[in-house]
Image 1 (cartoon, helix red, strand yellow):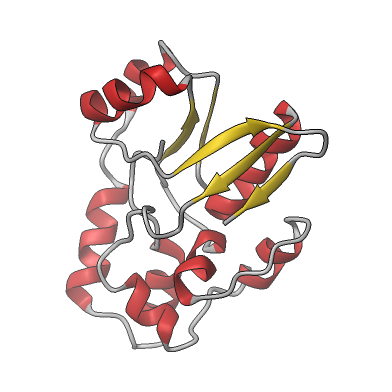
Image 2 (cartoon, rainbow, N blue to C red):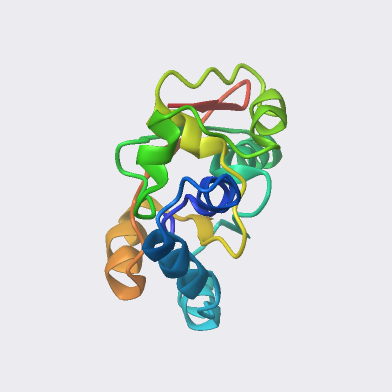
Length: 162
């Protein structure tokens, strides 16, 4: 599950380059300043792993959970919620300054679309990425407003896939 849309890194990079909409940047800042303690408390009751998504990007944090848990994680990039304006900026080829480092930090990572590129976008005050038993996912998503963005499975070799 993911509790917030991603795209803060590219929106701030777009803002610095004079390419992002002021309205989109203001909405991102408002989201970043909204506390998430209540969401974390609700998810913690069922979570098997949980982390806040920060500078490593969604893919980097998912990879770290996969590696630590001995799992394969498959993210459906089409289900990952995006902040307004993030995809449009990614489609222009804009990236944050640490995007390439984030891609390099995930073994075998080869993003093939602007939407997948955003999985490596560094976040500030990002949402929580949470793994939990499949039978708890729908209820947890409904209770917190989180979005189910992928699946986990056992693996001989931990991996992150799109």
